[in-house]
Image (cartoon, rainbow, N blue to C red; front, side, top):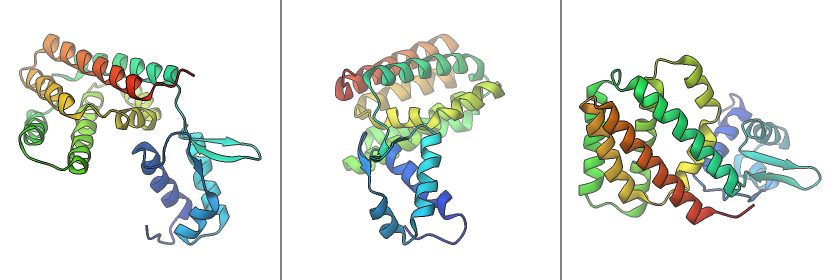
Length: 215
């Protein structure tokens, strides 16, 4: 990554945030400050400032006299985040279903159908699925007409995004997205909410089965 001279800490923080959320830096992995200095060609100060920002966002833990570590979510934390996400999104969907533009729903539906029908490498599928997944769930929240809910969700966005990237159940999730989107297009609140609940329940079970640590 090439940095410009504008706010080195901002740029480093954003890059590290993406690596943690995308699990390029593994959960619980120690972050090598010296290696980051060399990678970005900077002194220790902007790296430490960037890491402190991620500590404030809950993505990095600092252990005195030991170092910085990527967040290592426990099974309980994963479950709590998934349950909170379900509460927020099912409520939001009931409030937003009449407000999400049909052009947006048509776009996301076609993208999901293309993912289902076209051949992709695993990395391509992962990247395209993650993009449509985030857009769908963001549309549900952003169209809820509740500014406080959007603000609160933004505060925990990165942790929810991290749990999303722990999900490897992609093909099934695409099918579920298609069902949700079709119900939303029909403005069928009951069917859409039920489909979203089933989808998020399945996401939670998948993440816990693959990543549960029992601590």
